[in-house]
Length: 619
Image: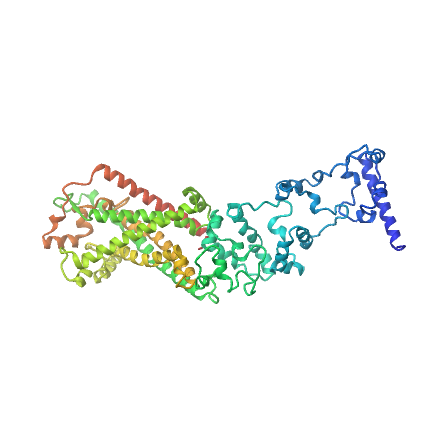
């Protein structure tokens, strides 16, 4: 005690001097020692001097006490301390907190106000405060990987306030509300998206990337976390443990139960889904890696071949148009075609109707699917909000899928009729399949492709075609491949619980890659290559209207499909395809407006896709 006494006296002298100086400056010359003489049961001079408030006088907080005598006589009412005078930011945050709503003031946590010391970044001090009231939650947290790391002194590990805040602790509210569901993921991303922090702690950041690439993460990015699972739904909020820990919610023994919180009919097969499987990781996820590589190869090869085809055709068609114009200027006589503007039927009403279904469904699927694929883009969120939200977009997407299955079914029926039923097509099924009226490729298409490239390179005349060109056959057959790739994978993602009863969950990872990349291939191809082949090529720009009214005049017939015309002439059936009169004005106006709108939408989506890729958007 004798050894401590000198230090106490020094502290008292220092405290008295500093305090009296501060008070004198404010006209409140009440020596703090005077207060301590009476209130030594509250705090000692040394303890207070060493606290965070040690540089303040007692009356810095108890401002109403302006006279010691009046105070001692009970003439001054001692009021609760108003912390906002110094702690404005903290008070403002607390005012908006759940603690304030439940009448929990500053002193409920800072009850040691006279001896309070700086926490100096030690999260354990703040966490211990929370534990005084939230002891049940804290007990769970202590056993978690976060709690254990924190107790071991790792200040990078998550503490209570890292998720909930120090003073602005907002109520979680309705568990299914937007704010609550967003909170379940956002607070996890705050740390796990910090590359530097995760690196120094040996934590793989792939969890964030793979989550954001998933259907769940994309909906979170688009602003609809209430529709999908967040981080805490799988890993829990406080009992976060490594997957190998038997008590972990993501341990193999508990996965069915965890998944069943959202997917009621989850099975052990269903839980084979790679929640954080990366298609860039060939070592750990070879199936995903090679699926991604195969789809990327298909996408790059297809675009490389057909964009080259488009560019060559664009230039050659431009030159050809210039040559025709020059010939007219010279006065060269153009071969006269009798009845050049006589109209013939190329497509029936059934063909037109099915093509309209194709356009409508494709636009619906593209408009609702691309925002999900490029969920990190600002335009994607704007589009999704414009639809009325992700649930509306999902319903529209599935409507587009249903329409797709309808026209595909109709195409299958028509194919069967073509091969086995129709009487106006000569030959047996094999002859019909490879005949001139069939959309199935044959050797003639190889010759036509070679002829077109010779024409592109100014090495020969432009080929004359039969009823179907090789690019039209490619478009038709692409529907079959698309139905297998996009339709099959789409059904799996639409009904995961059903398919999860007999397929391993990692098949959904494969389906996601296939559906995403094949959809990108389809939209990019249709809105660039197909639009050019049908509408953008110099011979037809700005639009070939034949698919909407089914009409083609004789001059176009001879120029585009001379071999088909010659075959019809030899068979004597050309007059069977004559249309007595063209389609009506109102019909043409409505369908042309629709057609131009579809082209405009398609080109706009191509621009948005290019923008997304230029700004680093992924799956």
